[in-house]
Amino acid sequence: MKKFYLLLLLSVLPLQAQTKTYFDAPFGAGGGYTPSWLIPDLKGLNKYVDAFGTPELSTSGFYASGGAGFVYIGFLPGLRIGGMGMGGSTKERKTVSGFTREVEYISNFGGFTMEYTIPLVRKVGVSVGMVLGGGSSNLQVSRHKANAFLWDDVWTELSDGSKKAESYTRSLNHTYFTIVPTLNIDFSVYRFVSLRVGGGYSIAFGDTWKMDNDVEVANVPSDIKSGGLYISTGIFVGFFSY
Image (cartoon, rainbow, N blue to C red):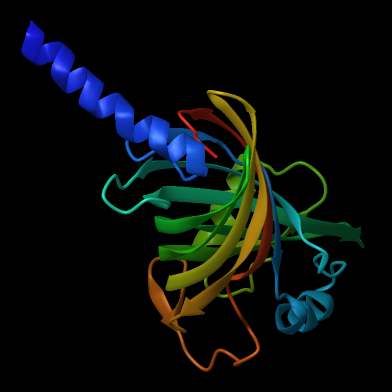
């Protein structure tokens, strides 16, 4: 029993020392929900969206839902590692001459995180870091009759190769490796609760797009890009000492 209390005392003393200097707690951890706003570069894609017949996709961004978690590295004060992920989508549609055209853009990415928290002010942690991981951009393009379909007509249209299908859906997908420089500010509102605001820029590596049943798409224009800027907020539960 004496050994137990001795070990407990030895583990508490470093935490107290860190609190006094406002470093991250060396044996802490946390996690939470991170609602975000994704702002990908859709200018190149919108040239094709406009020609397809729908309004252009928003270039001001769209909502994304996500989460993150981390653990402090005890032997390096202020350094923490963990993981994060988020995803969201935006869509546009238009009905003209009995046909509805729709375009939906879906973006997801995440990975391993590493951050260093600068001890500046009590109850405030400013962290610089990066995310190493991967992501995907998915584009769903569809054209279909605005009125109800008849069951038999669906199968006739699919099986009759002699005429052009009036209704169709195409799925274009781009998977990539990403590096994301990040900057986050955490505000401790309670010993075990922290609020976050921050962001980063997802740099995408890889230019291979595939369609439908994993068929590669050639000659993709260089201005069709994945990744982009994001602004993130969050509420975390755990042990914090800044």
